[in-house]
Image 1 (tube, rainbow, N blue to C red):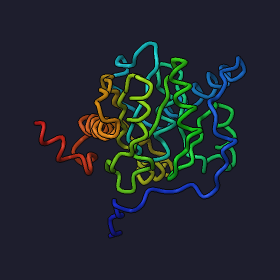
Image 2: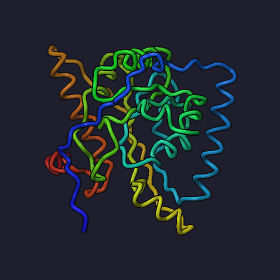
Image 3: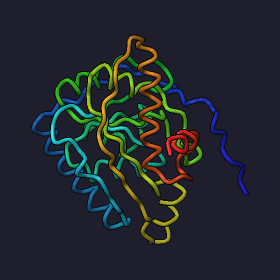
Image 4: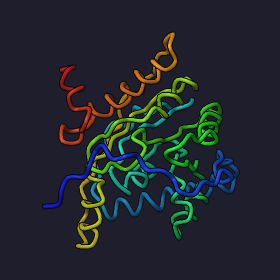
Length: 246
């Protein structure tokens, strides 16, 4: 049996910093068409290769700024989220993907907000805030990385900061079954992976007299909402927080 990964391991840091690639994608007519094509192609592939159960899509606000927060289990999360979103969604993604063959090219065509992990990326924060000011829906993983255990890890303060600064609604979305060690072996055996997507009810964070306290409390609220939507085995470090409320 392989040893369980260290949940306390440091969050990853982007080794190559290229601030010039970080920007809010312009929604040109060409990009809107490209997104329409990419999303429908992904949806076809997902329905062909997986069995997906989705609940709560009706909770998506029909308009206005929305910050989508989700757990991050594996490579399939992004594909699943884009495939079934009921509104166009911008994605915050690690800049490490920029140089990946084909994948990086497709993500550039779609238009993502590249973020350099493990350091203050003010350009990425500004791009997200500008997008929310335009009324866009933007997705971010508050854990800051793909979970090394398959359970929720400690949340980073970026999502709470963005929600408080913009006043945007927060839409919690959770995945189960998208872990790489579940999806890829199934594909190799020509089997369809069982995946669930749960969209929770939107909520807002409240500002307090102390900005730092508001961000800390907001981060805990975001992560607790995600934990409440997940089965106990996925709640990780937030399992006790959910149990305290029961």
